[in-house]
Length: 339
Image (cartoon, rainbow, N blue to C red; front, side, top):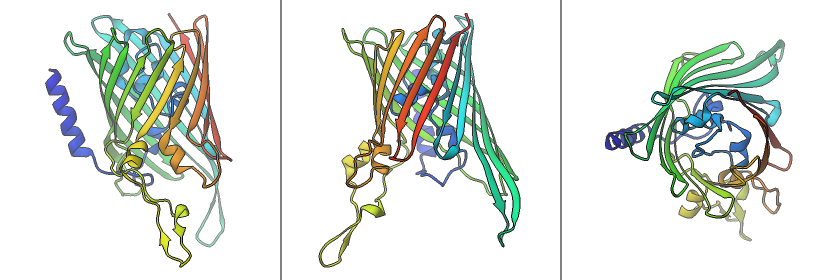
């Protein structure tokens, strides 16, 4: 059974792994950070198998019994006046049937002033998108592997244009409780548009990601490493702003080597007191740091930090993520144990 699952993963990746960069796919909101915990650990964490019910929005293989009757609300006042958030809930029917998960993600792009081709005002308009997901995970026999899947229904409204799409996420995770070590492979956003905006069919943001995490022995720290967008190589493009000129006026474009490409796929994070009532979280997103870095200026792009406080059956989380000198993002989360 495990061999069949792995073979299916490889076939899916080989079939769908086309390079996708920003601006070439629709429904980009599907890749927005899901929670303050995820934001604090660099923006993408795939291996948290615990109470965190929001984690299953990104990796359905993490759905587990600890999520039973957990309800979470997350919100972010994002860049450029954009606001978005999500809600997640999980329920265990019985220990044999495992746990079912439901989540909803929305993004509101705000109000815009509309004008026609000659500059006459056409009034204001807005844009918003929503994704509803239903997920389930199961253990593969008596192994240490778990397989999960999300089914997503996606709706989008941008001014007078509407679109409807469907997608699935597939996750395979290895959980070694003796070593407190997890490793996972996730295929996200495998799907297509059902109805298009203006009779133009666009791809959705398909992604392959790999993650690992482990709690250190005798030290209350859990480290996380995520390799994102593995379907795309190279992921980095030369920045025209970093072109240099010599005394003769000859220009040299920025060169990004093999190591530089690997680094831009990498996200690292660490949690201090991961199982306690008070958590401190730190992360660094290398691609964000490189793409938003300003020459000869230290602006700490890519860094993020957050905390979580548990009080009785309620857990509050907050994260501050650094993007540029003039633009940062704050993330707020509330999880309630309804048991």
